[in-house]
Image (cartoon, rainbow, N blue to C red):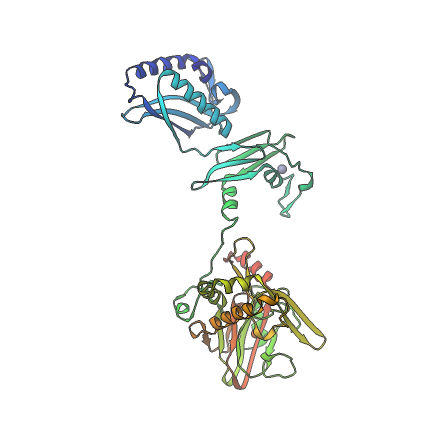
Length: 476
Ligand SMILES: [Fe+2]
Ligand SMILES: [Zn+2]
């Protein structure tokens, strides 16, 4: 046995006889022990040992064989008494990262050998991250805390980022997923110094950074950035200006439409919709929309009738010769989370039942059918509120039996939005440009009399998330 496990049998015979002596001198209780093993990193290098008559420093897994690649780690086995205080180093191997199978084989051989000598091994202890290879996937132990991570071989082959498989200039995949055999298995696979190296049957090589795999696993189903929800009270205490936690204000040199546009174009693009690019809202009956009157407006989001509602709304009040006309903001996500807490069924109805919204004007008829509350398809985090009770079409998307429950849920959310504790009223002033997230923040207006001119524009969600990604701002 000693011969099989050792890479230098002469040394092992010596160790074996020492171990036998030690075991002989112990009582049955004293012999009960734990087998500890650990990998320590080594400096790369080789040296001829005259004593052993071999080159040391290359990969040498004893009975699993030697190879001519540099060893990077020493895998050390040690015995430790359970009831009595004793420690004996028993053997070591030079590795360059061992696979789960190699590890298992060495461990089994080592245990058999030590049992034959007379030790009573009760447990094994290690802090290794092990790589285990299965039929069609591999498993990395303890990738995150105590959880292991599994990856299909097919997935690993598909996502190869070598220059042949992936174009690093265009950031596009060259690999044709249709050409990968479903039963693909690595010819060789090892974990070395934070890298997972795979050689495929056709000698193609793939390398993964373990940290990247770790990151991919941890972001698979977890919410990314959970925005800080606010009501009137908490809004006072939010001091940072990050776009996802508080609405965003910019200053403009002058209260004109052109200056407003300049502020917007500084960071992103202006969206072109049926309302044009930059718009002016005043008391104008030519436009077929309630916004162009002097009446008050309940909190709502815009563009529920578009297949993609605008991501940002920009407001700049450039003229204020009026009484009233304050701006109302409500955090829709806060209202939703309050609703979810008190009435889970209502929340579920609003997330699962799509309703139709519409915008009808001369030569124009927009409609879109979607739920009022949209969740991230994977993380189930809040993604969008589409709440505009003015723009609802005939409610014919809900089964007859659910219609009244749906109405109750919709009204409950409306009541939550209308709670004074959620309503943040502010007076916009010429010179201050307000950016708000139309997928989350509802806006409204107080009734007014006199002249009031609001300029602004829409920014698509894709343009502002692009700007946010570019600037490294957190997104939800
Ligand atoms: Fe609006
Ligand atoms: Zn490749």
